[in-house]
Picture 1: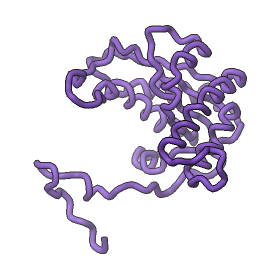
Picture 2: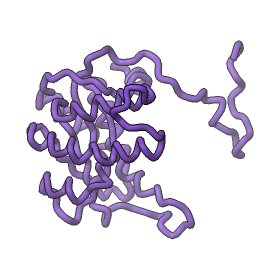
Picture 3: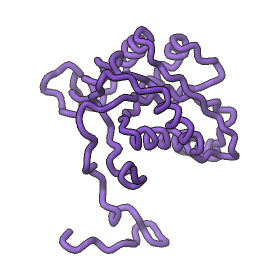
Length: 217
């Protein structure tokens, strides 16, 4: 598959088929993903691929509490409300079906090996993610190229201690993302809604337009 096509059609999947993802498909994806850039090539990451149903059920139960609280705080709705916004209903359907998703890839990081050069700035520190999330995105693209869909969540990071207990993750590692992995029920999207390039790419100084709007826009 062409890389640009994979990037433009790699939307978040909410409905997965129960078919297992073969190990050779997973291996090929992880083998490619490991080349994601990271500060100092310190390679701080490891993965736990959860396929055991009882373990996935445990993760589902841990997920539902933070998901319910998040939607209550952000939307003012309950996740079981049939009149909740569509994105809530779609994501809730996935949450309840989490044990049926073929695999949940838990991304772990040794934060002592992550470069965090913005730790002393008076704002939320984000730079450490540059040594973490490119690998996760590589994994999603490598899976997409093989017809496998993904959905990324970070809500379970809020209950990290419980996740570590369930999956026997060493204390010195942080959990930084959970990736749902499986074949999609529906076809991959052909169009994802994103802001046009003209709105967020600037020349030399922020706010100075680099690309002219396309004719007809």
